Amino acid sequence: MTRRWSLLAAFAVATLLIAGVVSYFASSSPDGLDSTTLRGCEVVETAGGEHLTGDCIAQHANEHHLADSPLADYALGGREGSGGPAGVIGVLVTVVVAGGGFWLIARTRKGSDADEPSGR
Image (cartoon, rainbow, N blue to C red):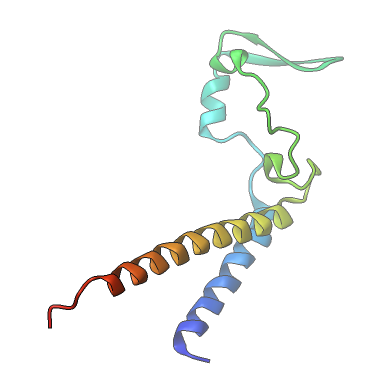
């Protein structure tokens, strides 16, 4: 195995470990943006779910149209504790999309280099 493939394999293992294992320890508390948009409001539990009272930015927010998607809220199907598999799927999709983009760019550049006359 060449040095390049060893480095890529080590990177892949580290990335999947971080996405699959460390994500179980991530905080479920709102992040800074969520906390800021909720400032000035109070969350009230009603029969229909949560309702915001007061004066805050989040009071005017609507549910995203992809809220029912399989990987919404960093979980598989909205199930609690499934952040690890969702993280691994996210990493794999990102690597495939980015790798495909880089492959297309490299292929395009290689083809355009062959069309140019060499200056030698």
